[in-house]
Length: 116
Image 1 (cartoon, rainbow, N blue to C red):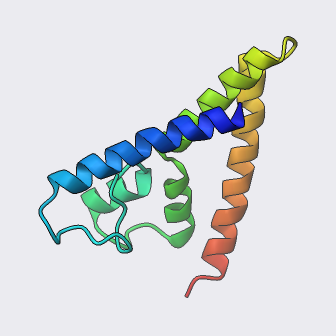
Image 2 (image 1 turned 180 degrees about the vertical axis):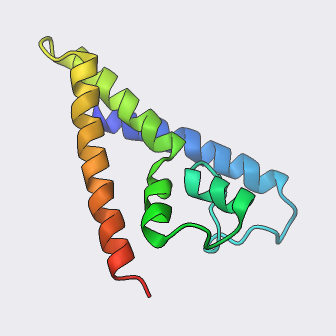
């Protein structure tokens, strides 16, 4: 299930990245400076309000709210519920969502504590 989910998400995000890079003007996109697909909440907030508006902790949390990550969690929940006869989709979603939130809260705390 995990392999199929990662494959689906990777294929779609790669195709979208290639299409966006082909549409942009040559030399306008630098791969290591910005993401090709602005799919997380942090990029959208920085586009509207400007850079360094939010504290580092909230910026790290906003990066976790990504459309591809949410889609991956939904696919994982559906897939593991389909494979397991006893597990419901909602229960799988609660487990995956809970682990995801806890992981990114810890990562945001570490990121804000050790950032310069």
